[in-house]
Image (cartoon, rainbow over all chains, first blue to last red; front, side, top):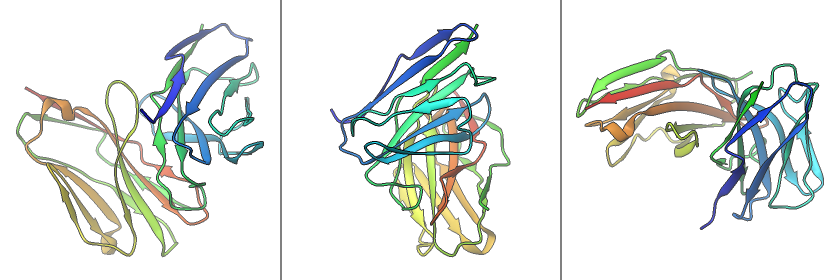
Length: 116
Length: 113
């Protein structure tokens, strides 16, 4: 089945540690995105990528890093510089870059990160 | 700048009641797209519908219907004869050309049996 997978579903991290969240899609979509969701709030864009080896900062990129070495993969690293990393992280993809276009974004199941 | 407001933070209904979710948006662009997503307790956002600013025709899909009114900058969503499985958080979102996808704060719908 085609779709977006994120792993792990739950992740616990000690303060000061970097952690990487996985996002894989087999939809052959060009564009991929990372969002952060805090309790009771909407989604905020962290990073997005429209092609391999290219990515752009979203609204809240500080303390995060990404890579796009393969079309189907867009991992997100939450670094120790992120002051308040506990949140729900959602990955999305679209056939083309929806930031400037109109393609619909489709979302993965999310990873819930908790900093202990 | 874009903005999406979902004034209702939570709505609680009894099964089989209708429920309408309000969405008001702001944009200076004349070309834009509006979306509704559903987020069940599992967390995944499920795409429900997309409408463009040039198409104000309202749509019905099964128990779901949408009312798009440019004159009031609203894109409301109605669930008819609600079911327990409709319990979720519903997000309205806006995207104008050259801008990112902007989400409202979400409305939690609780359908009680």
